[in-house]
Length: 220
Image 1 (cartoon, one colour):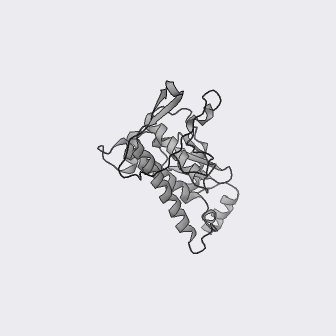
Image 2: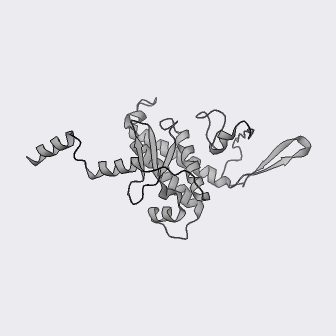
Image 3: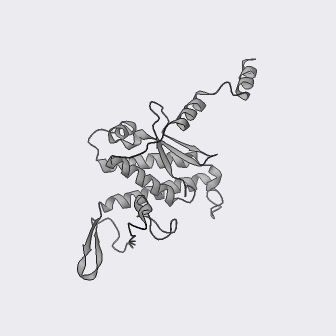
């Protein structure tokens, strides 16, 4: 009888599960308008790059929300195609707490693990059917989803190994010189493509990671 009442009340929208209530509050939470910390900007930037580099998540952009004490970390809304992320992942201290790390872990490593955790969560919420029929019938959708995460992890490692890019103008040739940290673990034959965009015409590209056409080349 109790089950019958539950079905009736739920059908009329009078009851919901704890999970449904949390998701509803998470969806209604206000957006973070401006990301101010360098850590938060790195997490936002690299998470967007991970989403853009995977065909199944391409075109999905994350919005960080002020969800307060809610335990939910990330929520993908299939109906509206929105991807919401808790603002705690914009804070270095809170990210360290969520990951369960000690204070002596480098900020770069915290960025890596934060982005990896969020991207894995996102992949887990996308329909498994989107990872099927990818040309390799011998592999399961679960395998393709794990592979997407592995590829994103490796691109993150490659990017973070490069360190900060240093760009200086070269007046005598009217060009630019780009330098980055040389890592002995990287292949010396690695092909790097650099694109230049005018700030006056392409200011929208400041927050993107692009190499040629989106989805055609690995970033960075």
